[in-house]
Image (tube, rainbow, N blue to C red; front, side, top):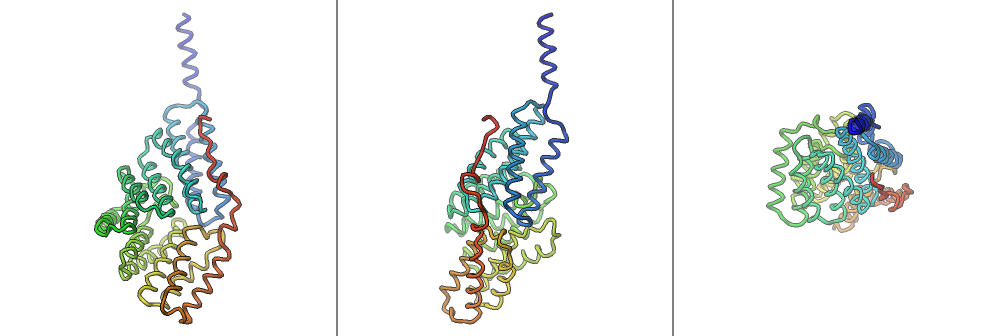
Length: 342
């Protein structure tokens, strides 16, 4: 009878849970809402809300729940960490992003979720890319393709891998990856993506990566063609799904291609929407691309052309409102991670 009583007590414990279906559903809904709001709403409040969701998932994981709910919570924690990492890179803290992503990977392993693994690799690629570590970025993109079994992660990773190979001089590899990515684009089903925002890839967003690849290969005409097509896709996309951050980056590719082709009016026309970006959305990658445009103008043999002077003066005004002046978070607060076991 004592043994039977012990079994009954264990039954009571097993049936006890600190998480219900609605709690899990709300966590994932909040994550999707934040992702869709990124670079449309002010970034820092979204960062704080995302950190709050991560902490909420960690806190619940310290309690007791059914194994299926534990996997759901690890998934929520992993997605929130991945979004925090993406934001951290945009805030010019790629090393902090990598800290978030190491913990995110463990969460993805515990959730046994391939799509999350794929987007973690995509985000690791992005953090490495903006540190100019193209070999490491390419390794992340290539490995991520092993997990990209649904949604648009494969399109992003294949496109990014081609861009990385072009950057470190593997012309043939870049062209193969580009063909692969274009084949993926033909069969894309974005409705399979779980989160959205920066963690989804439209054909327009991929076209920006293809344009970047062609620029690195010295093919300005092809780069402009890809960028023009991508902008056309963005402009036809609903405001809810339109990725304004990626669109601005593609417009920078347009500017570069026009400059290389000597089409100065086209360069100015493409740059104007970028210069209209609100200061709180002037993330570090965008500022770097604008700086690269400035360097191209400076090194041009037509530096005294009035329109190039206009471009340089406008960029100077734009960079005075550098995004770093609008974000009080330091590297320690952005990289702060408290594991669920601590």
